[in-house]
Length: 147
Image 1 (tube, one colour):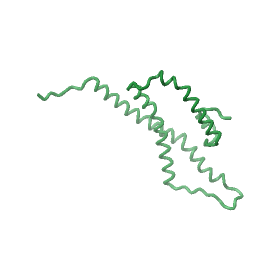
Image 2 (cartoon, rainbow, N blue to C red):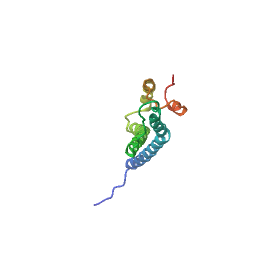
Image 3 (tube, one colour):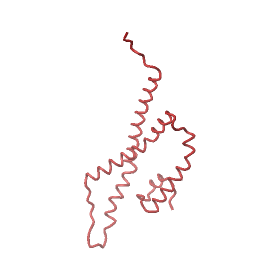
Image 4 (spheres, rainbow, N blue to C red):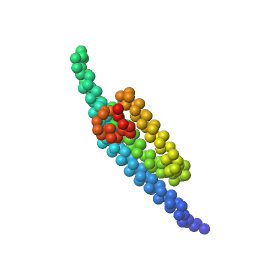
């Protein structure tokens, strides 16, 4: 009386969805890490290394960069993990939509508030001087116009 049960179409559908989510997660994370490496880390490191050069002048002391490999690797890993995790948002929203917790209409309803919040946050950061630099690539990536 040991009958092997055949998989139901629902279980087959869930397996396909799990495979799709796994592949999409890997692709989005790798894409985000590559984005962080190519477009974020180089300007950030240039800025950080430029801080030591900007202080030189008629001072009674000289500031020289002291870069430890441990700090450099920690900075790069956190930069790549953060940008990779940020690119996971489409996968998370897709799974939440499949589960019925969010829908397109609900997301579009709060779209204008999210754009205003990003612009206000960016202008506040630019007013304090937290931005890396004012070069063209950064201006294209920023959500709000510069003054």
